[in-house]
Image (cartoon, rainbow, N blue to C red):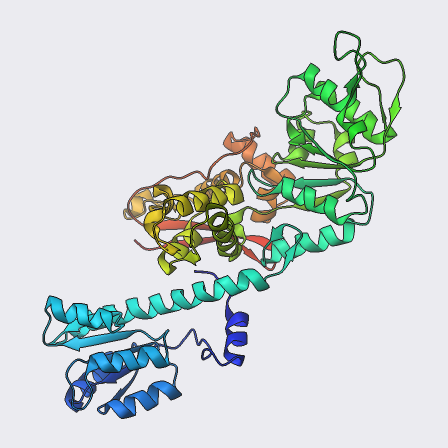
Length: 510
């Protein structure tokens, strides 16, 4: 899980509520009055874990107080104080340290007693070292997840935000910086990104941060109305009701405020010239009118399309493109925003739980891991829908894996697979390049500009290759292409580092 909790952990430690997180540590305290058992565990697992052991319960409790152990392993039956009492004392002293109980009495009653005492798991004697290692691996991974989820709730409160936007990733910090700098200007802004990335929320936040915040915020969806109705909606009409009524269009309605041209990539070519004239001259002529009506509105546009490619294909006017694209605000897909996925998930849990009146406070570590792993093709909108559904269905205080949709529970990262077990089937380097380019092109929704940035090649080179591969035509949306077979794997990873997209190719022997 990619939650960045180091800063929060340091703050928590300063308050004295937890020891610092050492992500490389795998400290295990073994407590058993039989020194031979302690030495056997230390010798068998000493390479995989940092093993310390005590044969006295009193010494063990002093060691727990002084050291941040990842797990305590204790025998059930010992002189003066048994393993269950030790478990309860450890949970009182360090609630986040899991305890594994070893017992030669592996019956149901013993298991129930161990769980009631706060034990995470129990293992029967004689101890199989391979089994104990698996248990310790699982317990330590669970503890790390538990700690990160606990700190996540604090991170949501302390994380940097801008208006209604939330996120700590480099791309969101860059977005906040752009919005902060442009909020005081009158420049037109173009917000781009996949569907569901929150482009309309960014536009509204920009309006609320501007000096026009007390004035109208008017939205026109360029994709929802046929041409004649869209023109009336935008420019108004002098004969909207049998020639007797006058209808103000969106440009005039937004006078003094902000006009959002949503999905401007869907604007019919026949209407683009009129929009360009209105934006350039600050006046519109309502349908059927004989004179122009002036307006003063800041224009913000959003699109999930690659407008630069549409200009080259003569499907979008170049002069309109440059008129609306004075300041560009690109939004990365949620899958490229790192720990923002979990910050947003926690925020949505709190929002929908409050709205539903349910005592849901967060996520289990396992649910958080699934949310962090999933690619979220529908971006923030899909995540919001997922959490709303989970809150509605859950019967627990924290959302579990079972509360999540099946596609999130069953998700596995996409891979591009090349069958090369047989040397005769090894493909040429040119074919590897072709498959990789096409995979990245599909993964970014066939956005040529973003694909060229991700691949590190200029646009003309990419266009030439795509034409050669027969994938030159642009379409909106699109899921990542996949192919699969047995054998060695080429795994394509798209990640964000330092605010920029990078691509990586990793060959896995399979």
